[in-house]
Length: 94
Length: 296
Image 1 (cartoon, rainbow over the protein chains, first blue to last red):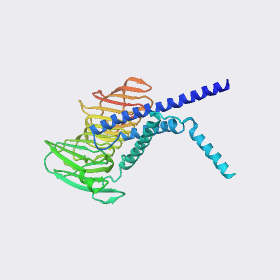
Image 2: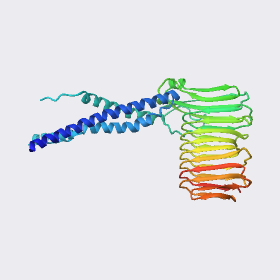
Image 3: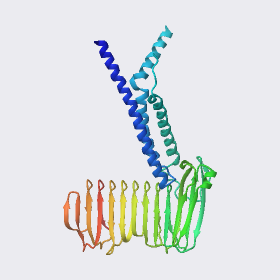
Image 4: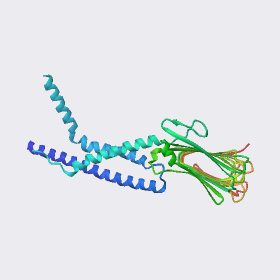
């Protein structure tokens, strides 16, 4: 019974991580498409000042944060690695 | 068992790094272009050299032909227009770029077109980060009847004008200061607008900048229309003002020093006529206060 619940938990966690990664990809492609349109409008109307980089910067920070949450900090991978490293360090000290 | 990577696991980090690269590039560009540059202003002819990585060049050109209209289109940097007693137009400029070679690609084009003189910077094929601001100081004769200035980031100043002139002034992040406007269309997003008008059609539009104006005369056929979102509007008008007044502010206060025959008065709207009410005078703000004062 407990083993079954554990499997369901893992399944749910895996599903969430996969969904987060796909969400990030969708987010990135929308960002890239909108920025491309703004860059084209900017350069067709006036080639000097690249004002479209303002939204690219603001929104880009959001995309980077989304990437970090989907790939780097997803599923507590970083935490696991840090615990592992601490255990190794303690073992070396002994 | 070794886990298999899907294409999402491979492409995700690549796109993530691309997003980081985009953020870094945007930041570097926006910090280097100095989009809100307002300094340096009008000391043309001073300190030309290599300061903090920018190379400067200056120039002056005089046009002795008779023009009716002056058109200036700038992107970054102040535009200063001043009257003088000569009959010619003199355009002085200081341009900045990252290197000498970029500076050569950075042209200040002055093009007579019929009775109009058009002045604008033309950027070379290099990335925008390589080009800096352009400061203009322009002297105009009394024969000129219209001035149009369009700027993106920089102040627009018209002073000591030799005659009443029709004006069209537009900037995004700088302030506008002018006088002797015989017809004025002024627009600023974040800067303030200060004007002195001698009549004609007056239209001022700001988003967050305040508007302060002096109206010295108005005649039949003239009009005043001022719109602002969050800026306050202060108008001072000549004693003999004859206008149909509509003052409207959603959350700001409204006051009027003139004796007004009120036709409608609500918390956020005051409507009525001063004298015969021949000239429409409309002021609208969302959160700024409105004040219509009588000149001493």
